[in-house]
Length: 315
Image (cartoon, rainbow, N blue to C red):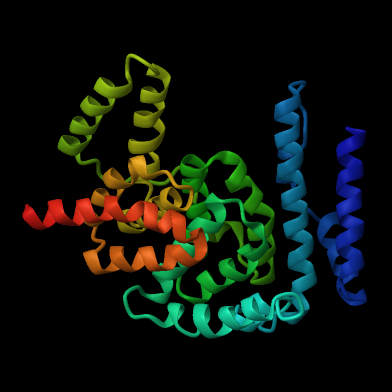
């Protein structure tokens, strides 16, 4: 108990110290008036892992409360809007060529291409950053995504979805950054993805076919994987309404390409196109992914995209 209290105190002092004087008092007041629900996430279990998770939740909640208070006096001026200047701000003194390419090429050309909407480009980019655990640009791109029309609920649900497809650790690494962005914009938990929403209808025929194929390929090797693939992914995660099926497919394909996991790209790209992603949009995804996931990962995915396009054209 002493350790986690010290951690909270340290974070409290650091955050309050970073606030203007008037807001520091407000931040302290916010913590003093913290809701009783905070007690429910304090460590009470004798299990070390559960205690660690509880501590992390408490820290994130405390940080969000404090950051919200610090931002309250500057509503409207702390939207954290990203631009090429934001991303390349520190690059000019280290790599002038990188700063130039960020301004002129990445934001000056790629982000302005018509093949994908700015919202879709943000979803693709955010998915890459989360999937690869690249935290340095997350705050800027989370903010840009919100500016480009991704809702707080959709961004929250993207984190939940990518925990399954890129790993819990990568999704968890993004949580404190998302908490800061949400706090700066006064985004409340009520605006985020709920725990147990009413699920979208299940396509029984398609699901039966998927179950049969997965059971045949994997069941004798990893029955637990088969169980959770059905129970947690395709009968829950993929039916959650916080992201449209097309957008869920968009971030899944982006995550797979970003980590060079081409073996599953074919299935998920077909699913994305079944869910409404057009071939020109899918093609433009590769261009966006080349810049954020790297040329080798983009080129490794091209044969799979080509095969899917060909099969769908032939019917």
